[in-house]
Length: 185
Length: 84
Image 1 (spheres, chains in turn purple, cyan):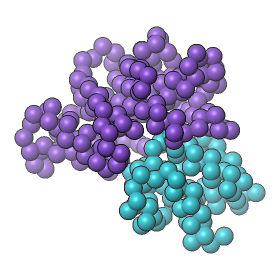
Image 2 (spheres, each protein chain N blue to C red):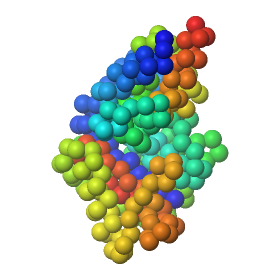
Image 3 (cartoon, each protein chain N blue to C red):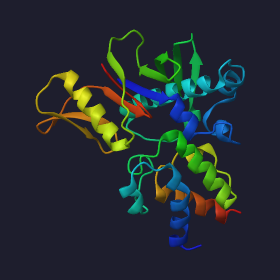
Image 4 (spheres, rainbow over the protein chains, first blue to last red):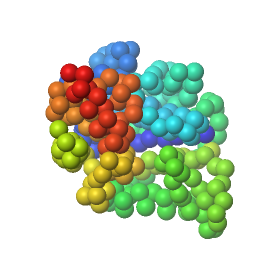
């Protein structure tokens, strides 16, 4: 299974004030907060850890079918600048990230080294729905399959549907601010 | 506080973060913060902090974990207010 998450850093700076009292405490473990405060670029570290957690969470939800909102239950470890792990209870997820000045993009996998296809792209339409539709269109185009649509299951996990059959394919979609991305195993 | 008053307070709190106007205009107990209102999950933290400030309560992570809908938020606020 695969999960992804993209953070537009400009959008994040506009939307979230992570220095707000109690904000970090709700999301990050003491060890993660240490990483943030000791980072050269604290904003980047906040959103790197955040995107790692989000990507791992998306895999966890596909695996176990239960939604929850408790980012602190997922703990990140950085193995290098662009590789890390996220642990949720007994489950470990391997993370690969792309970091640029403009965005951070993380992909989570259950097994490290598994091959996948992923792409990110710019989308300047400001509207949430328009962006979501454009992302789905771009993703479906790369699949090159006829009559396949994307639906969300009862817990909000996107699935591919062909006629009335759900396809057994794991993929993940993300968009934030001016950036979108998809990942598929 | 009546149920309607509580919903209306929650509605004011979530307004700055919503990304779906229709779902917001039709907000009810069944509304999901993420799937319906399309609140991004980092802003869901802001919603929770705003709820804490508005009602002068503290929401532990175990309670926060369930707070993905208006109904769940109402239950937790009521529970915390009752325990005051």
